[in-house]
Image (cartoon, rainbow, N blue to C red; front, side, top):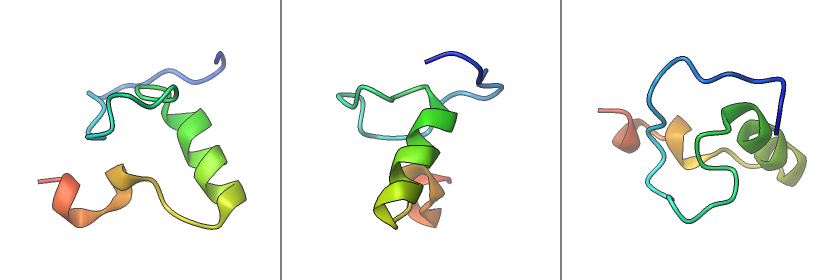
Length: 46
């Protein structure tokens, strides 16, 4: 998973996900599914 550097600590609570800390890949995968990653949910960004 190259081509995307995280600049902040990954807020996603799903640490078992293969895309954890690979934000660009995560957002792309969720976009293809038509939904949003957990880190986009306000409850997880406090």
